[in-house]
Length: 222
Image 1 (cartoon, one colour):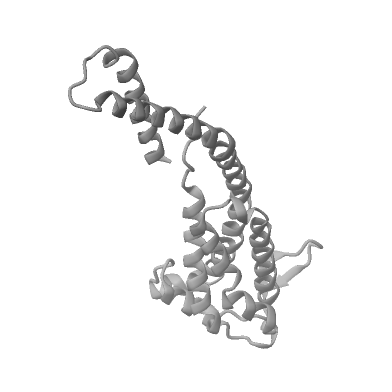
Image 2: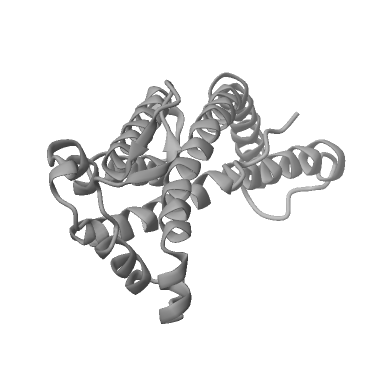
């Protein structure tokens, strides 16, 4: 759009020069007048086309993108919260291990160490909507289902989002972590460190998703 605006500016300049500066200037070379008239007519035609495109295509499209972005952002916040709250619960539940081993809580090594001693059958610090304490297996499944549901809500406005935003969403929806948590009965596997690699990758995508929707769209001209 920036290039189109530049060309429109050049067209306006040509029209102004033709009408108010060069109109009474004698021809400097043969067919100078004809060339000037041609540029003038082309400039008029371009401006008409430009404004038609701006008002009927570009502006409505940007408005749709703005609304879609605002809609998606609400679910992005919920996705980030669902994932980060799970990580925070895991870190808090094993705070003594983190402190003893002096682990960097933002590292992959810390995630592996914490999951290795997290018993999926033990109670987590969270309760379900019936106020019944959930096991870690239940909590993982609950957060996984929330994340997938929020991602699918965003796909409703796929057509008005940027391609790179859709790419991150698609990667998350098709990520093997969601499939593993859904299909593997975690309550039968006490050691959850097999999820560490997938959780680390998925966490990277969560950060990328958050960054994508924190970026502002190109301002809409009034």
